[in-house]
Amino acid sequence: MVMEVTSPRLGLNPNALREFKLVVVGPRKVGKSALVVRFLTKRFINEYLENTDMTCNGVADLDGENFRVNIQDTSEKGMRISSIEHYIRWADAIMLCFSVTDAESYKKLREVAVKMVDKLNDLAEKEPSRVPPIVVVGNKCDLDYFRKVSRQDGYDLAELLKVDYFETSAREGWSRLVSRAESFSDPCSSDNETLGIVASTAA
Image (tube, rainbow, N blue to C red; front, side, top):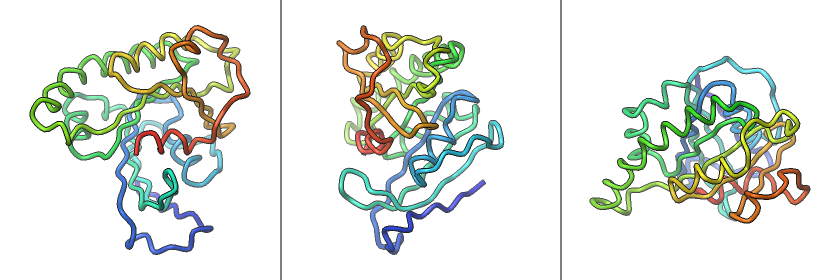
């Protein structure tokens, strides 16, 4: 499925812009599609075709520069190591996503991350410039009262890959970079940024 999403406020020709390719990887029902659509359109849509690959094309501002974005919103098949190897070489950035309300989604994503470490280390030795930025995202933080995955667990997963950890809410449209100190603190906080900060960090 292909979705064309162009920000109407920019009025730009997407073909004249630099392309930014982002892959979103994670188990089903963690809110990957909702995050993608929220980032591109500033809207929250609650229902999607479950476990379906979707490509979203549009224009977005990343850290002050306009890009033509190509976002691959993957199904659960995207967590296969063969798919991960392809994404590592194709993408400009990779977002690994789980739901803080679903411990099983965290467990599955951690298994993928463990397999990724060797692949990333091998590529870093041979072609360091080809290693894409990666972020780990714990979504559905607006449902904190149903939380099953601690901030510390999310931060530890990001530490495994030596990358940043963000907690997000696609429903409410915010994200928060979690530091080591904050990973031990109360997850409830009003000090949040818009979802664009996640993509800007990956860019």
